[in-house]
Length: 577
Ligand code: GLU
Image 1 (cartoon, protein in one colour):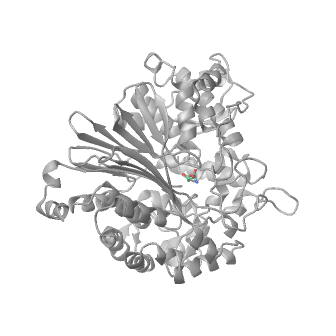
Image 2 (cartoon, rainbow, N blue to C red):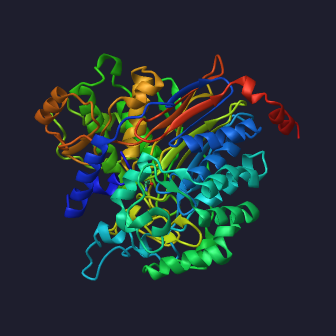
Image 3 (cartoon, rainbow, N blue to C red):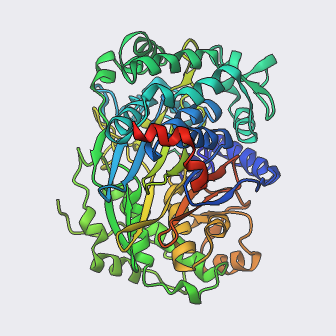
């Protein structure tokens, strides 16, 4: 499922959301599946991203002797150019890094935070009612202080090996020379006319007054200049000086209150990963404010299910998933928020007894029609890509500007969109995810790493707002619970729900299973839709062989380097430096 869906699913079906739902369902139904390049096997290194040109940018850096972290930086900058509606320097990200040398896993949390002036009731109107999502998502109040660039700079200074400026070269070339817009960009541009045909963005994204179509030529000279400035000045190019002033001006012109001090105050956080378990595997993901806690809770609730004895497309399997997801989403809204502001009962939610208690609430003869948060013990549109290198390092990254084309606020002179991430806060105050000064909104983003006997065997993640939790969970279950091959585990149709009784599903869920699910009390959405866009890399520890796989729903490409490629003279030379 695409990023645009997240609020649509949760919101009551307003005219706005219904229009989007119909538009996207029919667009999805028509989108041809492009399977070329979606799977690759190689012994040297691997990149899997949602765009072939971004994957190639990563490979270039790996070939030049860069490590997985260098390549991840190059992939993210390239994505900003080739998939500008999903992520970029105007947004935020979570990086999950495995450093082979130390066998350490850690997280860089580059999630956007709210300006210092943010108040719990900032999304309420005068009558104390939530401002409708259709209005608030393009307002300056929705824009969070961006984190991605600072996160990239931190990743590079901590673990990178190549000079920073070189990592921007592939993205810079793409923004100067241009590229043919992909089908995903064409699809989202058509659905986001107001954003792409604005006075500021129109010159780039709305040629001849109609949204850029697939195959149309996309050149971004303003973004190229910004990338050059970032080559020279690293993150200060954006957080101080003329670009910072332009950000603040654009946000304030749209009713927001972000200041230069807010930009200066932004700091990405290095955090330990959140550890969970699934059978013989240890699973590392991104704890609050990221979405890994929800994934691990759902995995824990489902750990005892013997999936091998449950047909993969049966009502029984979908029922189990839907029931577990509803229990987890009830807990998510009751307990999960920015840990700097609220005490998230992480241990309580992952406690074996608690998980068994949640599992016991699942009845096989009927959907649970009154799902409530549990009582855990208290103790104290987006993109995903993965890069793995010849030394065994892994960078697993989910990054976003929230809705497609973010807030729609485009800095014409500098060539990028600003996020609307603060719509991830609850509009109605009172809960753990209410807005607050310098607070990060709860995210569903969950780059996740699976380890077996201490070594990584699988890294994955997805975009899709709240559906991310369901996508990561289901690929883990298809791969680890059912033992399917990686590509099949990704392609297997997924389901999503966050509350009783409705759920969405991808094409391929058998009509007989939907019928049975209706009889149990679940209400399937009338039309299938895409859910998430998973990219993953698997490592065979015995043969040191990588398999990369990409979802078929975007222009993703997995590609690797054999040891031969990796041993190119220039790579050796560089490593020797
Ligand atoms: N804002 C979303 C989140 O952090 C990510 C954007 C999306 O994939 O919809 O959960």
